[in-house]
Image (tube, rainbow, N blue to C red; front, side, top):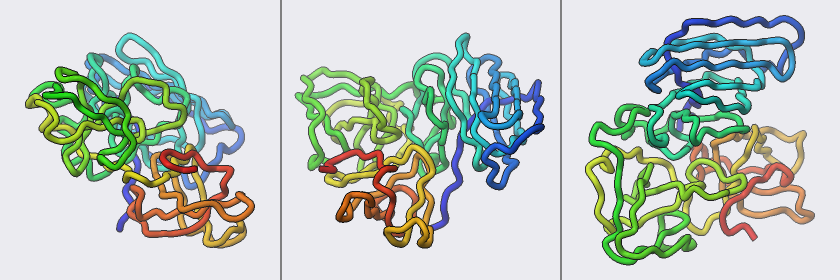
Length: 311
């Protein structure tokens, strides 16, 4: 299957862009890369980048309702974003073409942080993390592409006592049980009709769909806005997943000098089959992940960031 390009920033209108690539290289892979910024926030947005290695600096100003493309040298940047009357800081890894979409200021971003979808929102932006958001099949159901549904937010109300699961499957672990009348605003749907929401609790290094909790189909009443929720990739019940926080090589053998079969990026997940004797290597199967690859190989166990029944 053809690999899907990632997406990252979205602003609009370029009013000011200045940059320099003076001393030193900054983890240059094959840059420069295009950075597309779409601004749907309702006000001017500003993105400032400063290279963590080297002297490249950029400042992008995009007016509301506009889309602009910029050229950025490859590397890791400290970023400060100004939007909606506030600011957020973190890091931005420019190692491919990026797209960042700024969503409306009111309310939370419509996709609850799912890495296969586009969004940047100061309330729930991945502060301190690399902003790796990617295109995926879920975009087909994303009404307004980050601006929310024209029918309003999705509202769910439990008809009876409802069991909420960690993954969209009754075989998954139970997150909580809530009484009739429980209400929540889901931000995503699974392919089998479950509704996912971010519970708003500390989740260590969980990212993307692993941050969501799931409501069974038919367990409650939903508003018209739920029809336009994005359908996202979801992890299978009973599987341990690796959620790498940086680029991770998948090797053919338990040896860093062996062939690299695949490179997992942040926002790409793999099924962890188990550890090799000694515990230094983990075997992973990408077919149960979201990359579209069927590679089975090995990653260094020290790189693992896992979720699920992994013991």
